[in-house]
Image (cartoon, rainbow, N blue to C red; front, top):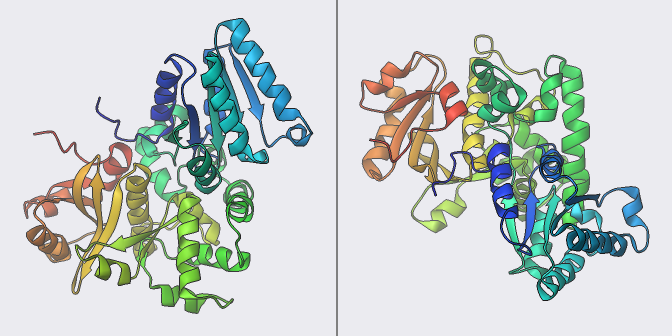
Length: 415
């Protein structure tokens, strides 16, 4: 079966989870991970509504979950419900709120298999580290993982009833957090929501709990620098020099990896078939949801007033879409040539240049040179609507960035 274009988007993840829960129980524990505020709890609510009377929803981060014996009592409830209803689904939200959650679930999963109890278990958590680390070490062979990532424009249009013509632009100016969309007309409230509901919990709690962050202030500064330089190539030395707190290059690189594991920022490597050169090159910083760019203090740029900044925001949104669609990403640069991003995965192999405003054939020299050196990658130009002809005159496929953000790249299998 062909994977959907946005397999980590809300609708696709919901459909896949329903399919797995329709399989005979007990199956493997389903681990649903992803950023904060992308709808994991809402998705569990849809599962609950689909099978009324056969589900048990538990919030592991609720105050009562900290009481002695809480988990044992809830687990017994789930077992009784499964036995009495001829099958049940246990929905455990924010599982990392439980001390030793992975050990508890390991024993539960093993017991299900021994007793052949018809109980499915779905577990959610906000940080890849909190769930991923524990699950890999303790629950190997007992779980399957699903990732619910940042929403693409098509999901905003479909589920929030935003006009398709507006949805792509919104993913550039306000990102893809569904809960924030209702506040998009009030800049102050929108920014406050992102800070209080996403950034502070992700950096201050999720990442800090996942690993011993020795310099939390430095982690925040690395995040702030990344937000201030979307879709820009920035050396670790330059990031280090902009910090008010001293730290080694290894610490800077480690904190960038943490931010990617927390679904906030990705440091994209340079494309090279020589691994040593790839590792030595400076990374390209990509903020994984453009809504986070608005927390830097400035309002979203306007294309005519700030064309360069606007271009960075559009480019960042396009690369972030590919990351959230599960593609492997690089950038390419061999002076004087550069390509905005290289993509490999379910979308095929692509070399993509993003252009906003007017451009000429000279501006596509980097893409043409990359195509000459690496003909196994299909070139693609993303540009403003109505400007595709400039690229097509050079024999380069072109798509408006709005269409790309809404529907992704052309189907690589289409002829």
